[in-house]
Amino acid sequence: MIMNPAHLHLMLNHIPLVGIGFVILLLIIALLRRSNEMINISLLFVILVALWAIPAYLTGESAEEIIEGLPGISEQLIEAHEESAELAFIFVEAVGVLAFITLVARRFYTKLGKVLAILTLLGLIIGGGLIAWTANQGGKINHPEIRADTSALSVPSYKSGEESDDD
Image 1 (cartoon, rainbow, N blue to C red):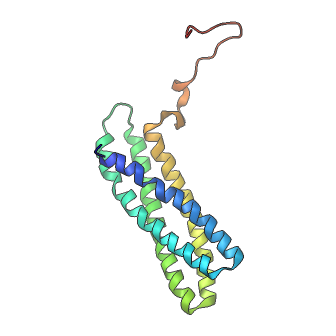
Image 2 (image 1 turned 45 degrees about the horizontal axis):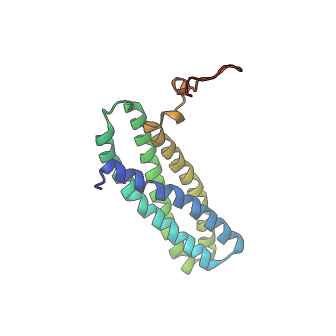
Image 3 (image 1 turned 90 degrees about the horizontal axis):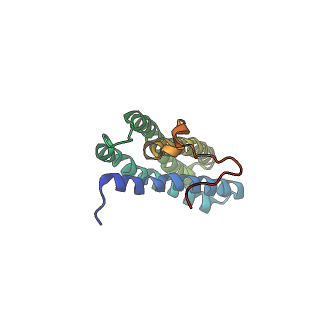
């Protein structure tokens, strides 16, 4: 089976989404335990998530070219996803750079390293929200059941005592 860019994009974008949630929890635990090793590992995972976000973001344009013009695909939904993806990508990459700076600072400046680790956590929480919003916007492109205008998808209701013809 050969994957097209849209398939590749769908596969890649789940890793930063799940990864950022994992890293948030890991860094919270590390900070609460005051474990330098866990904090450093958490910061390395932040960098990995930021690096993984690069191919997830870069495959978006190719995925768009494949699906635009298909029946039921809204250009407005694609644009909303694209705009939120750009903001989330820039923010997550900035948090990745901050995590790298934090790793370096922790080696030489203990107090600054602590402050930067907390700022990294705050950045992760905001970045996680942006990535979750982006994923939601992307899901709306091909999943009408999660769009706001789901009235066309309503399930028929049966009055009590009536049977359906599905027998």
